[in-house]
Image: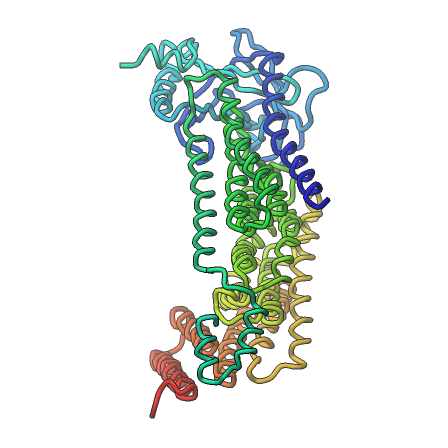
Length: 192
Length: 433
Protein backbone atom coordinates (compact mmCIF):
# COMPACT_ATOMS: atom_id res chain seq x y z
CA UNK A 1 0.00 0.00 0.00
CA UNK A 2 2.76 2.40 1.07
CA UNK A 3 4.82 1.52 -2.02
CA UNK A 4 1.79 2.15 -4.23
CA UNK A 5 1.24 5.54 -2.63
CA UNK A 6 4.89 6.47 -3.12
CA UNK A 7 4.83 5.37 -6.75
CA UNK A 8 1.60 7.33 -7.27
CA UNK A 9 3.26 10.43 -5.77
CA UNK A 10 6.25 9.79 -8.04
CA UNK A 11 3.96 9.67 -11.10
CA UNK A 12 2.31 12.98 -10.11
CA UNK A 13 5.72 14.62 -9.54
CA UNK A 14 7.07 13.27 -12.84
CA UNK A 15 4.04 14.60 -14.75
CA UNK A 16 4.44 18.00 -13.08
CA UNK A 17 8.16 18.17 -13.85
CA UNK A 18 7.63 17.29 -17.50
CA UNK A 19 4.57 19.56 -17.82
CA UNK A 20 6.48 22.75 -16.98
CA UNK A 21 8.98 22.62 -19.89
CA UNK A 22 6.22 21.31 -22.18
CA UNK A 23 4.09 24.33 -21.20
CA UNK A 24 7.01 26.63 -22.05
CA UNK A 25 7.40 24.93 -25.43
CA UNK A 26 3.66 24.99 -26.19
CA UNK A 27 3.34 28.71 -25.48
CA UNK A 28 6.38 29.53 -27.61
CA UNK A 29 5.32 27.27 -30.49
CA UNK A 30 1.90 28.93 -30.59
CA UNK A 31 3.49 32.39 -30.62
CA UNK A 32 5.99 31.38 -33.30
CA UNK A 33 3.26 29.86 -35.48
CA UNK A 34 0.36 32.29 -34.93
CA UNK A 35 2.06 35.47 -33.65
CA UNK A 36 2.39 38.58 -35.77
CA UNK A 37 5.96 39.19 -36.95
CA UNK A 38 7.72 42.44 -36.05
CA UNK A 39 11.21 43.53 -37.01
CA UNK A 40 13.00 45.30 -34.17
CA UNK A 41 16.09 47.31 -35.16
CA UNK A 42 19.06 46.35 -33.07
CA UNK A 43 22.61 47.08 -31.47
CA UNK A 44 24.82 44.07 -29.24
CA UNK A 45 27.36 42.60 -26.70
CA UNK A 46 28.52 39.00 -26.06
CA UNK A 47 28.30 37.59 -22.57
CA UNK A 48 27.60 34.06 -21.37
CA UNK A 49 25.01 32.47 -19.10
CA UNK A 50 26.27 29.73 -16.74
CA UNK A 51 23.16 27.67 -17.41
CA UNK A 52 22.19 28.46 -20.97
CA UNK A 53 25.55 29.01 -22.64
CA UNK A 54 26.68 31.76 -24.97
CA UNK A 55 24.41 34.39 -26.35
CA UNK A 56 24.47 37.68 -28.19
CA UNK A 57 23.10 40.46 -26.04
CA UNK A 58 20.73 42.56 -28.10
CA UNK A 59 20.22 46.28 -27.73
CA UNK A 60 17.38 47.90 -29.59
CA UNK A 61 17.38 51.20 -31.39
CA UNK A 62 14.12 52.31 -29.85
CA UNK A 63 14.33 52.29 -26.07
CA UNK A 64 12.18 55.32 -25.37
CA UNK A 65 8.48 56.06 -25.98
CA UNK A 66 5.71 58.31 -24.62
CA UNK A 67 4.61 57.21 -21.15
CA UNK A 68 0.97 57.26 -20.15
CA UNK A 69 0.97 56.69 -16.44
CA UNK A 70 2.14 57.96 -13.07
CA UNK A 71 5.19 60.18 -13.60
CA UNK A 72 6.84 59.15 -10.33
CA UNK A 73 6.85 55.43 -11.00
CA UNK A 74 9.46 53.30 -9.23
CA UNK A 75 12.32 52.20 -11.54
CA UNK A 76 12.09 48.64 -12.80
CA UNK A 77 8.31 48.34 -12.83
CA UNK A 78 6.60 46.17 -15.46
CA UNK A 79 4.77 48.06 -18.24
CA UNK A 80 3.26 47.43 -21.66
CA UNK A 81 4.71 48.71 -24.93
CA UNK A 82 2.10 49.19 -27.69
CA UNK A 83 3.68 48.01 -30.94
CA UNK A 84 2.79 48.55 -34.57
CA UNK A 85 4.57 48.38 -37.93
CA UNK A 86 6.08 51.72 -38.93
CA UNK A 87 6.20 53.20 -42.47
CA UNK A 88 9.68 51.66 -43.03
CA UNK A 89 8.40 48.17 -42.17
CA UNK A 90 10.07 48.01 -38.75
CA UNK A 91 8.38 47.78 -35.36
CA UNK A 92 7.56 51.01 -33.55
CA UNK A 93 6.59 51.36 -29.92
CA UNK A 94 4.18 54.30 -30.01
CA UNK A 95 3.44 54.43 -26.30
CA UNK A 96 4.03 52.64 -22.99
CA UNK A 97 1.28 52.20 -20.39
CA UNK A 98 1.02 50.61 -16.94
CA UNK A 99 -1.81 48.29 -18.16
CA UNK A 100 -2.01 46.22 -21.37
CA UNK A 101 -4.20 47.51 -24.23
CA UNK A 102 -7.56 45.87 -24.85
CA UNK A 103 -6.92 45.59 -28.58
CA UNK A 104 -3.74 45.64 -30.65
CA UNK A 105 -0.36 44.03 -30.10
CA UNK A 106 1.81 44.78 -27.10
CA UNK A 107 5.04 43.60 -25.48
CA UNK A 108 5.54 43.39 -21.72
CA UNK A 109 8.59 45.54 -20.97
CA UNK A 110 10.44 46.86 -17.94
CA UNK A 111 10.04 50.62 -17.48
CA UNK A 112 13.51 51.66 -16.35
CA UNK A 113 13.15 55.37 -15.61
CA UNK A 114 11.20 58.43 -16.79
CA UNK A 115 12.78 60.72 -19.37
CA UNK A 116 13.81 64.29 -18.57
CA UNK A 117 14.68 67.52 -20.39
CA UNK A 118 13.76 67.27 -24.05
CA UNK A 119 12.76 63.66 -23.36
CA UNK A 120 10.24 64.60 -20.66
CA UNK A 121 6.96 62.70 -20.94
CA UNK A 122 8.77 59.65 -22.30
CA UNK A 123 9.92 56.50 -20.57
CA UNK A 124 13.09 54.47 -20.98
CA UNK A 125 12.21 50.79 -21.33
CA UNK A 126 13.90 47.40 -21.78
CA UNK A 127 12.43 44.82 -24.16
CA UNK A 128 12.21 41.24 -22.76
CA UNK A 129 13.88 39.47 -25.72
CA UNK A 130 17.42 40.72 -25.22
CA UNK A 131 19.35 37.43 -25.54
CA UNK A 132 19.95 35.45 -28.71
CA UNK A 133 21.48 32.07 -27.82
CA UNK A 134 24.05 30.59 -30.16
CA UNK A 135 26.49 27.71 -30.28
CA UNK A 136 29.52 28.58 -28.14
CA UNK A 137 32.06 28.89 -30.98
CA UNK A 138 29.73 31.00 -33.12
CA UNK A 139 28.74 33.60 -30.52
CA UNK A 140 31.93 35.75 -30.68
CA UNK A 141 31.85 35.86 -34.51
CA UNK A 142 28.15 36.64 -34.40
CA UNK A 143 28.79 39.43 -31.97
CA UNK A 144 31.51 40.95 -34.16
CA UNK A 145 29.24 40.77 -37.18
CA UNK A 146 26.42 42.26 -35.18
CA UNK A 147 28.53 45.21 -34.02
CA UNK A 148 29.76 45.83 -37.55
CA UNK A 149 26.36 45.76 -39.22
CA UNK A 150 24.39 47.50 -36.48
CA UNK A 151 26.53 50.58 -37.11
CA UNK A 152 24.28 53.45 -38.18
CA UNK A 153 26.84 54.62 -40.74
CA UNK A 154 27.32 51.13 -42.22
CA UNK A 155 25.74 50.18 -45.56
CA UNK A 156 23.87 47.16 -44.15
CA UNK A 157 22.39 48.92 -41.13
CA UNK A 158 18.87 48.94 -42.57
CA UNK A 159 18.87 45.16 -42.81
CA UNK A 160 20.06 44.25 -39.29
CA UNK A 161 17.19 43.43 -36.97
CA UNK A 162 15.59 40.86 -34.67
CA UNK A 163 12.45 39.12 -35.91
CA UNK A 164 9.99 38.78 -33.04
CA UNK A 165 6.57 37.18 -33.04
CA UNK A 166 3.98 38.75 -30.76
CA UNK A 167 0.84 37.02 -29.59
CA UNK A 168 -1.11 38.07 -26.50
CA UNK A 169 1.39 38.78 -23.71
CA UNK A 170 4.04 36.51 -25.21
CA UNK A 171 6.84 37.73 -27.47
CA UNK A 172 9.08 35.06 -29.07
CA UNK A 173 12.42 35.97 -30.62
CA UNK A 174 12.49 33.96 -33.84
CA UNK A 175 15.65 35.01 -35.63
CA UNK A 176 18.42 37.57 -35.73
CA UNK A 177 19.10 39.00 -39.19
CA UNK A 178 22.46 40.49 -40.15
CA UNK A 179 22.58 42.31 -43.49
CA UNK A 180 19.21 40.79 -44.33
CA UNK A 181 20.28 37.18 -43.68
CA UNK A 182 19.61 34.86 -40.70
CA UNK A 183 22.69 35.05 -38.47
CA UNK A 184 23.75 31.40 -38.91
CA UNK A 185 23.51 31.68 -42.69
CA UNK A 186 25.40 34.97 -42.60
CA UNK A 187 28.19 33.38 -40.51
CA UNK A 188 28.43 30.39 -42.84
CA UNK A 189 28.78 32.62 -45.88
CA UNK A 190 31.27 35.02 -44.34
CA UNK A 191 33.43 32.30 -42.72
CA UNK A 192 37.11 32.93 -43.62
CA UNK B 1 33.37 -1.02 20.25
CA UNK B 2 33.17 -4.37 18.48
CA UNK B 3 36.95 -4.50 18.23
CA UNK B 4 37.34 -3.82 21.95
CA UNK B 5 34.74 -6.32 23.18
CA UNK B 6 37.00 -9.45 23.23
CA UNK B 7 39.67 -7.53 25.20
CA UNK B 8 37.10 -6.25 27.69
CA UNK B 9 35.83 -9.79 28.23
CA UNK B 10 39.43 -11.10 28.65
CA UNK B 11 40.38 -8.57 31.32
CA UNK B 12 37.12 -9.12 33.20
CA UNK B 13 35.58 -5.68 32.58
CA UNK B 14 32.61 -7.35 30.88
CA UNK B 15 31.18 -10.82 31.17
CA UNK B 16 30.74 -12.90 28.03
CA UNK B 17 26.94 -12.62 28.48
CA UNK B 18 27.07 -8.83 28.66
CA UNK B 19 29.24 -8.69 25.55
CA UNK B 20 26.75 -10.91 23.75
CA UNK B 21 23.86 -8.74 24.91
CA UNK B 22 25.69 -5.66 23.56
CA UNK B 23 26.20 -7.40 20.21
CA UNK B 24 22.49 -8.23 20.08
CA UNK B 25 21.51 -4.69 21.11
CA UNK B 26 23.53 -2.95 18.39
CA UNK B 27 23.45 -5.64 15.68
CA UNK B 28 26.29 -6.73 13.47
CA UNK B 29 28.83 -4.12 12.31
CA UNK B 30 28.02 -2.95 8.81
CA UNK B 31 31.37 -1.59 7.68
CA UNK B 32 30.60 2.11 8.11
CA UNK B 33 33.74 3.17 6.21
CA UNK B 34 32.60 1.30 3.13
CA UNK B 35 29.09 2.70 3.47
CA UNK B 36 30.49 6.24 3.67
CA UNK B 37 32.60 5.68 0.59
CA UNK B 38 29.60 4.37 -1.37
CA UNK B 39 27.49 7.28 -0.16
CA UNK B 40 30.07 9.93 -1.00
CA UNK B 41 30.80 8.46 -4.42
CA UNK B 42 27.06 8.07 -5.06
CA UNK B 43 26.42 11.75 -4.35
CA UNK B 44 29.60 12.82 -6.14
CA UNK B 45 28.57 10.75 -9.14
CA UNK B 46 25.15 12.42 -9.12
CA UNK B 47 26.71 15.89 -8.87
CA UNK B 48 29.27 15.22 -11.61
CA UNK B 49 26.76 13.73 -14.03
CA UNK B 50 24.32 16.58 -13.28
CA UNK B 51 27.05 19.21 -13.70
CA UNK B 52 28.23 17.54 -16.90
CA UNK B 53 24.70 17.62 -18.26
CA UNK B 54 24.46 21.34 -17.40
CA UNK B 55 27.72 21.97 -19.24
CA UNK B 56 26.40 20.08 -22.25
CA UNK B 57 23.32 22.22 -21.99
CA UNK B 58 25.43 25.36 -22.14
CA UNK B 59 26.76 24.13 -25.46
CA UNK B 60 24.11 24.57 -28.15
CA UNK B 61 23.63 22.16 -30.96
CA UNK B 62 23.03 24.46 -33.85
CA UNK B 63 23.22 21.77 -36.48
CA UNK B 64 20.16 19.93 -35.16
CA UNK B 65 16.58 20.94 -35.92
CA UNK B 66 14.57 22.62 -33.21
CA UNK B 67 12.37 19.54 -32.66
CA UNK B 68 15.45 17.27 -32.38
CA UNK B 69 17.03 19.64 -29.87
CA UNK B 70 13.78 19.80 -27.92
CA UNK B 71 13.60 16.01 -27.77
CA UNK B 72 17.22 15.92 -26.55
CA UNK B 73 16.43 18.56 -23.96
CA UNK B 74 14.21 16.06 -22.19
CA UNK B 75 16.90 13.37 -22.11
CA UNK B 76 18.45 14.47 -18.77
CA UNK B 77 15.11 14.76 -16.98
CA UNK B 78 13.82 11.57 -18.60
CA UNK B 79 16.86 9.58 -17.46
CA UNK B 80 16.56 11.07 -13.96
CA UNK B 81 12.89 10.11 -13.79
CA UNK B 82 13.69 6.55 -14.86
CA UNK B 83 16.49 6.31 -12.31
CA UNK B 84 14.35 7.92 -9.59
CA UNK B 85 11.44 5.58 -10.32
CA UNK B 86 13.70 2.55 -10.22
CA UNK B 87 15.32 3.61 -6.94
CA UNK B 88 11.89 4.24 -5.41
CA UNK B 89 10.64 0.84 -6.49
CA UNK B 90 13.77 -1.24 -5.79
CA UNK B 91 16.30 0.64 -3.66
CA UNK B 92 14.21 2.82 -1.39
CA UNK B 93 16.08 1.76 1.74
CA UNK B 94 19.52 2.19 0.17
CA UNK B 95 20.86 5.59 1.28
CA UNK B 96 23.66 6.00 -1.34
CA UNK B 97 21.27 5.15 -4.19
CA UNK B 98 18.65 7.57 -2.86
CA UNK B 99 21.10 10.44 -2.33
CA UNK B 100 22.88 9.97 -5.66
CA UNK B 101 19.65 9.64 -7.65
CA UNK B 102 18.06 12.63 -5.88
CA UNK B 103 21.07 14.86 -6.57
CA UNK B 104 21.10 13.90 -10.24
CA UNK B 105 17.33 14.30 -10.48
CA UNK B 106 17.31 17.82 -8.97
CA UNK B 107 20.16 19.01 -11.21
CA UNK B 108 18.52 17.67 -14.37
CA UNK B 109 15.31 19.64 -13.68
CA UNK B 110 17.34 22.86 -13.99
CA UNK B 111 19.17 21.48 -17.02
CA UNK B 112 15.97 20.67 -18.92
CA UNK B 113 14.34 24.04 -18.19
CA UNK B 114 17.56 25.81 -19.26
CA UNK B 115 17.77 23.81 -22.47
CA UNK B 116 14.19 24.54 -23.45
CA UNK B 117 14.71 28.24 -22.64
CA UNK B 118 17.83 28.26 -24.81
CA UNK B 119 16.26 26.43 -27.76
CA UNK B 120 13.22 28.73 -27.75
CA UNK B 121 15.23 31.92 -27.08
CA UNK B 122 13.37 32.57 -23.83
CA UNK B 123 15.37 35.29 -22.06
CA UNK B 124 13.35 34.89 -18.85
CA UNK B 125 14.81 36.02 -15.57
CA UNK B 126 17.02 34.29 -13.05
CA UNK B 127 14.63 34.64 -10.10
CA UNK B 128 11.75 32.93 -11.91
CA UNK B 129 14.06 30.22 -13.21
CA UNK B 130 15.32 29.38 -9.70
CA UNK B 131 11.82 29.46 -8.22
CA UNK B 132 10.54 27.02 -10.85
CA UNK B 133 13.58 24.81 -10.38
CA UNK B 134 13.38 24.53 -6.60
CA UNK B 135 9.60 24.08 -6.50
CA UNK B 136 9.80 21.26 -9.04
CA UNK B 137 12.73 19.76 -7.12
CA UNK B 138 11.11 19.92 -3.69
CA UNK B 139 9.08 16.68 -4.03
CA UNK B 140 12.36 14.84 -4.74
CA UNK B 141 13.54 15.80 -1.23
CA UNK B 142 10.56 13.95 0.24
CA UNK B 143 10.21 11.09 -2.22
CA UNK B 144 13.82 9.94 -1.92
CA UNK B 145 14.27 11.31 1.63
CA UNK B 146 17.41 13.03 0.46
CA UNK B 147 19.46 15.39 2.62
CA UNK B 148 21.67 16.52 -0.30
CA UNK B 149 18.55 17.46 -2.31
CA UNK B 150 17.33 19.41 0.74
CA UNK B 151 20.67 21.29 0.78
CA UNK B 152 20.28 22.10 -2.94
CA UNK B 153 16.76 23.34 -2.20
CA UNK B 154 17.98 25.70 0.54
CA UNK B 155 20.78 27.03 -1.68
CA UNK B 156 18.29 27.51 -4.54
CA UNK B 157 15.83 29.37 -2.31
CA UNK B 158 18.62 31.66 -1.09
CA UNK B 159 19.74 32.33 -4.66
CA UNK B 160 16.12 33.14 -5.53
CA UNK B 161 15.82 35.69 -2.73
CA UNK B 162 19.09 37.23 -3.91
CA UNK B 163 17.68 37.66 -7.44
CA UNK B 164 14.12 38.70 -6.65
CA UNK B 165 13.09 42.29 -7.24
CA UNK B 166 9.77 43.23 -5.69
CA UNK B 167 9.01 45.92 -8.28
CA UNK B 168 9.93 43.81 -11.26
CA UNK B 169 8.43 40.49 -10.22
CA UNK B 170 5.62 41.67 -7.96
CA UNK B 171 6.64 39.01 -5.42
CA UNK B 172 7.83 40.02 -1.95
CA UNK B 173 11.23 38.59 -0.95
CA UNK B 174 9.58 37.70 2.37
CA UNK B 175 8.23 34.61 0.60
CA UNK B 176 11.73 33.27 1.29
CA UNK B 177 10.58 32.18 4.74
CA UNK B 178 7.56 30.09 3.64
CA UNK B 179 9.79 28.63 0.92
CA UNK B 180 12.29 27.44 3.53
CA UNK B 181 9.50 26.10 5.74
CA UNK B 182 8.39 23.80 2.90
CA UNK B 183 11.54 21.70 3.35
CA UNK B 184 11.72 21.86 7.15
CA UNK B 185 9.45 18.82 7.85
CA UNK B 186 12.03 16.67 6.03
CA UNK B 187 14.78 18.02 8.26
CA UNK B 188 12.63 17.63 11.36
CA UNK B 189 12.29 13.94 10.49
CA UNK B 190 16.07 13.54 10.57
CA UNK B 191 16.46 15.64 13.72
CA UNK B 192 13.89 13.50 15.51
CA UNK B 193 15.49 10.22 14.51
CA UNK B 194 19.12 11.27 15.18
CA UNK B 195 20.20 14.90 15.34
CA UNK B 196 23.88 13.85 15.30
CA UNK B 197 23.70 11.96 12.00
CA UNK B 198 25.16 13.53 8.87
CA UNK B 199 21.68 13.55 7.30
CA UNK B 200 20.63 16.03 10.00
CA UNK B 201 23.95 17.86 10.33
CA UNK B 202 24.73 18.66 6.68
CA UNK B 203 21.35 20.31 5.90
CA UNK B 204 21.66 22.00 9.31
CA UNK B 205 24.92 23.68 8.26
CA UNK B 206 23.57 24.62 4.84
CA UNK B 207 20.30 26.00 6.24
CA UNK B 208 22.08 27.94 9.01
CA UNK B 209 24.49 29.58 6.52
CA UNK B 210 21.69 30.19 3.99
CA UNK B 211 19.62 31.88 6.71
CA UNK B 212 22.54 34.19 7.51
CA UNK B 213 22.60 35.29 3.86
CA UNK B 214 18.90 35.13 3.00
CA UNK B 215 17.40 36.77 6.11
CA UNK B 216 18.85 40.18 5.25
CA UNK B 217 17.90 39.87 1.57
CA UNK B 218 14.33 38.95 2.51
CA UNK B 219 13.99 42.19 4.47
CA UNK B 220 14.64 44.32 1.38
CA UNK B 221 11.20 45.98 1.64
CA UNK B 222 11.34 46.61 5.41
CA UNK B 223 12.59 49.71 7.23
CA UNK B 224 16.28 50.50 7.21
CA UNK B 225 17.82 48.90 10.26
CA UNK B 226 15.18 46.14 10.49
CA UNK B 227 18.04 43.70 9.93
CA UNK B 228 19.45 44.60 13.37
CA UNK B 229 16.54 43.04 15.28
CA UNK B 230 16.10 40.23 12.76
CA UNK B 231 19.73 39.10 12.78
CA UNK B 232 20.38 39.43 16.51
CA UNK B 233 17.11 37.57 17.19
CA UNK B 234 17.59 34.86 14.59
CA UNK B 235 21.22 34.12 15.52
CA UNK B 236 20.38 34.02 19.24
CA UNK B 237 17.51 31.58 18.54
CA UNK B 238 19.86 29.40 16.48
CA UNK B 239 22.37 29.25 19.33
CA UNK B 240 19.84 28.68 22.12
CA UNK B 241 17.89 26.05 20.18
CA UNK B 242 21.09 24.22 19.28
CA UNK B 243 22.30 24.26 22.89
CA UNK B 244 18.98 22.99 24.17
CA UNK B 245 18.02 20.32 21.67
CA UNK B 246 21.19 19.19 20.00
CA UNK B 247 24.06 18.71 22.39
CA UNK B 248 26.81 17.19 20.29
CA UNK B 249 30.40 16.16 21.00
CA UNK B 250 32.03 17.71 17.91
CA UNK B 251 31.85 21.12 16.24
CA UNK B 252 30.80 19.48 12.96
CA UNK B 253 27.68 18.18 14.70
CA UNK B 254 26.81 21.59 16.16
CA UNK B 255 25.88 23.73 13.13
CA UNK B 256 23.26 25.82 14.93
CA UNK B 257 25.38 26.71 17.96
CA UNK B 258 28.48 27.42 15.85
CA UNK B 259 26.80 29.57 13.20
CA UNK B 260 24.62 31.28 15.83
CA UNK B 261 27.54 32.17 18.10
CA UNK B 262 29.92 33.25 15.32
CA UNK B 263 27.16 35.17 13.54
CA UNK B 264 26.06 36.97 16.68
CA UNK B 265 29.66 37.89 17.44
CA UNK B 266 30.16 39.34 13.95
CA UNK B 267 26.82 41.24 14.02
CA UNK B 268 27.56 42.60 17.50
CA UNK B 269 31.01 43.71 16.32
CA UNK B 270 29.47 45.51 13.30
CA UNK B 271 27.01 47.23 15.63
CA UNK B 272 29.84 48.62 17.74
CA UNK B 273 30.48 51.01 14.82
CA UNK B 274 28.38 54.08 14.18
CA UNK B 275 27.53 53.46 10.49
CA UNK B 276 24.80 50.80 11.01
CA UNK B 277 22.86 53.26 13.18
CA UNK B 278 23.47 56.30 11.03
CA UNK B 279 20.55 55.95 8.61
CA UNK B 280 18.01 54.41 10.96
CA UNK B 281 15.08 56.83 11.10
CA UNK B 282 11.48 56.55 12.23
CA UNK B 283 10.46 58.55 9.13
CA UNK B 284 10.67 55.34 7.11
CA UNK B 285 7.06 54.74 8.13
CA UNK B 286 6.07 57.43 5.64
CA UNK B 287 6.87 54.91 2.91
CA UNK B 288 3.71 53.06 3.92
CA UNK B 289 1.66 52.86 0.77
CA UNK B 290 1.86 50.67 -2.27
CA UNK B 291 4.40 48.32 -0.68
CA UNK B 292 3.04 48.47 2.84
CA UNK B 293 2.53 44.69 2.96
CA UNK B 294 6.27 44.01 2.62
CA UNK B 295 7.10 46.86 4.99
CA UNK B 296 4.74 45.74 7.76
CA UNK B 297 5.52 42.02 7.44
CA UNK B 298 9.27 42.67 7.31
CA UNK B 299 9.16 44.84 10.41
CA UNK B 300 6.93 42.35 12.20
CA UNK B 301 9.48 39.63 11.49
CA UNK B 302 12.25 41.92 12.72
CA UNK B 303 10.29 42.42 15.96
CA UNK B 304 9.11 38.85 16.52
CA UNK B 305 12.53 37.18 16.13
CA UNK B 306 14.27 39.16 18.93
CA UNK B 307 11.12 38.85 21.05
CA UNK B 308 11.16 35.05 20.81
CA UNK B 309 14.92 34.98 21.47
CA UNK B 310 14.56 37.09 24.62
CA UNK B 311 11.74 34.88 25.94
CA UNK B 312 13.78 31.69 25.37
CA UNK B 313 16.86 33.26 26.95
CA UNK B 314 14.81 34.40 29.96
CA UNK B 315 13.52 30.88 30.37
CA UNK B 316 17.06 29.50 30.13
CA UNK B 317 18.31 32.11 32.63
CA UNK B 318 16.11 30.73 35.39
CA UNK B 319 17.96 27.43 35.39
CA UNK B 320 21.35 28.56 34.13
CA UNK B 321 24.52 27.79 36.04
CA UNK B 322 27.79 29.73 35.84
CA UNK B 323 29.04 27.26 33.27
CA UNK B 324 26.07 28.17 31.05
CA UNK B 325 26.42 31.93 31.42
CA UNK B 326 26.98 32.30 27.67
CA UNK B 327 23.35 31.29 27.01
CA UNK B 328 22.10 34.19 29.12
CA UNK B 329 24.55 36.57 27.46
CA UNK B 330 23.44 35.46 24.02
CA UNK B 331 19.85 36.30 25.02
CA UNK B 332 20.91 39.86 25.77
CA UNK B 333 21.99 40.35 22.13
CA UNK B 334 18.50 40.76 20.64
CA UNK B 335 17.45 42.84 23.65
CA UNK B 336 20.35 45.25 22.99
CA UNK B 337 19.40 45.24 19.29
CA UNK B 338 15.81 46.28 20.02
CA UNK B 339 16.82 48.94 22.59
CA UNK B 340 19.53 50.30 20.29
CA UNK B 341 17.11 50.41 17.36
CA UNK B 342 14.48 52.23 19.45
CA UNK B 343 17.09 54.77 20.55
CA UNK B 344 18.40 55.31 17.03
CA UNK B 345 14.93 55.78 15.51
CA UNK B 346 13.08 57.79 18.13
CA UNK B 347 15.73 60.06 19.45
CA UNK B 348 18.32 59.73 16.76
CA UNK B 349 20.76 58.55 19.41
CA UNK B 350 22.90 56.22 17.34
CA UNK B 351 25.90 56.93 19.59
CA UNK B 352 24.11 55.39 22.58
CA UNK B 353 23.11 52.35 20.53
CA UNK B 354 26.75 52.01 19.49
CA UNK B 355 27.84 52.26 23.14
CA UNK B 356 25.34 49.58 24.16
CA UNK B 357 26.87 47.13 21.70
CA UNK B 358 30.40 47.93 22.82
CA UNK B 359 29.39 47.04 26.36
CA UNK B 360 27.43 44.02 25.12
CA UNK B 361 30.30 42.54 23.12
CA UNK B 362 32.58 43.04 26.12
CA UNK B 363 30.03 41.25 28.36
CA UNK B 364 29.50 38.50 25.74
CA UNK B 365 33.22 37.85 25.59
CA UNK B 366 33.60 37.87 29.36
CA UNK B 367 30.51 35.63 29.72
CA UNK B 368 32.02 33.07 27.35
CA UNK B 369 35.37 33.24 29.18
CA UNK B 370 33.70 32.69 32.57
CA UNK B 371 31.50 29.89 31.20
CA UNK B 372 34.58 28.29 29.64
CA UNK B 373 36.60 28.48 32.85
CA UNK B 374 33.76 27.24 35.06
CA UNK B 375 32.85 24.41 32.72
CA UNK B 376 36.48 23.53 31.81
CA UNK B 377 35.69 24.23 28.14
CA UNK B 378 38.81 25.45 26.40
CA UNK B 379 37.08 26.19 23.08
CA UNK B 380 34.33 28.29 24.64
CA UNK B 381 36.84 30.27 26.68
CA UNK B 382 39.02 31.00 23.65
CA UNK B 383 35.97 32.12 21.65
CA UNK B 384 35.24 34.59 24.47
CA UNK B 385 38.81 35.86 24.39
CA UNK B 386 38.56 36.14 20.61
CA UNK B 387 35.44 38.32 20.98
CA UNK B 388 37.30 40.54 23.45
CA UNK B 389 40.30 40.79 21.12
CA UNK B 390 38.05 41.65 18.15
CA UNK B 391 36.45 44.46 20.14
CA UNK B 392 39.83 45.74 21.23
CA UNK B 393 41.24 45.68 17.69
CA UNK B 394 38.11 47.44 16.34
CA UNK B 395 38.45 50.22 18.89
CA UNK B 396 42.21 50.31 18.36
CA UNK B 397 41.62 51.60 14.84
CA UNK B 398 38.75 54.02 15.41
CA UNK B 399 38.97 55.06 19.10
CA UNK B 400 40.68 58.09 20.58
CA UNK B 401 42.51 56.17 23.30
CA UNK B 402 46.12 56.93 23.96
CA UNK B 403 48.78 54.50 22.77
CA UNK B 404 49.55 53.74 26.41
CA UNK B 405 45.95 52.69 27.15
CA UNK B 406 45.76 50.61 23.98
CA UNK B 407 49.10 48.97 24.70
CA UNK B 408 48.09 48.05 28.23
CA UNK B 409 44.74 46.68 26.99
CA UNK B 410 46.48 44.48 24.41
CA UNK B 411 48.94 43.17 26.99
CA UNK B 412 46.11 42.37 29.39
CA UNK B 413 44.09 40.43 26.79
CA UNK B 414 47.21 38.62 25.56
CA UNK B 415 48.11 37.67 29.12
CA UNK B 416 44.49 36.58 29.64
CA UNK B 417 44.78 34.22 26.65
CA UNK B 418 47.96 32.63 27.99
CA UNK B 419 47.00 32.36 31.66
CA UNK B 420 43.48 31.04 31.17
CA UNK B 421 44.63 28.48 28.60
CA UNK B 422 47.38 27.23 30.91
CA UNK B 423 44.97 27.08 33.86
CA UNK B 424 42.39 25.06 31.97
CA UNK B 425 44.97 22.73 30.40
CA UNK B 426 46.41 22.09 33.86
CA UNK B 427 42.97 21.35 35.21
CA UNK B 428 42.45 18.87 32.43
CA UNK B 429 45.78 17.29 33.28
CA UNK B 430 47.35 18.02 29.90
CA UNK B 431 50.13 20.14 31.41
CA UNK B 432 52.19 19.06 34.32
CA UNK B 433 53.65 21.64 36.68
